[in-house]
Length: 161
Image (tube, rainbow, N blue to C red; front, side):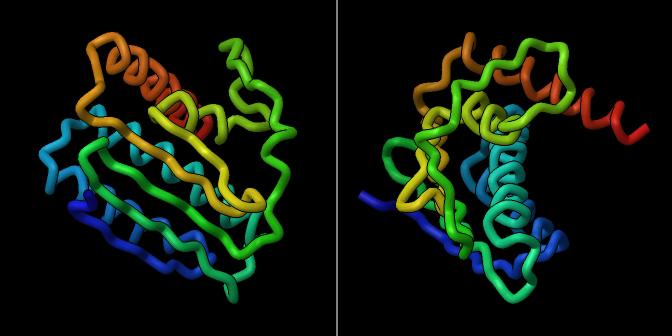
C-alpha cells in the first residue's frame, strides 16, 4: 500500500542537485529521520544523480533526470532515471573498498550499495532504484553506515582542501 510519493523532473545541470537535496531534507523531516539516515540517503542519491548527469545524460542540459520517491510499509524508496542509453549493469564487477584509494571506478555504485538496503538497476540500466528499509535498521547497520559516511565526508573534505 502506497502511503506517500513525489516525483521531480530535473534538468540535467549540476545546480538541479539543490532541488534533490531539498526533497531529501523534506522527506527526512516529515518522517522524523535522524541525521544518520539523512546522510546515507543524501550521499546515495547524490551519487545516483551525478551518474545520471555525467554518464547517462552526458551533461546535456536538454535532457532530464527524473527522481521518484515513495514511502510504503517497507520503508523509503527512490528511483533516479536518466534519458541516456543505459549500460549493462550485469557487467559491473563486485566492488570492494580496500581503504587505500580515495577514488576508483564504480565508487558511486559502491557507495549507493553500502549506504542503502536495496540497490537495483532497471530496464537498460538508465534507472536505479534505491531502498531504505527504515524499520529494519539495527545498531550494527547504523554504525557501519555512519563509519562509511564519515570516511566519505573526510575524503571529500580532504580533496577540497
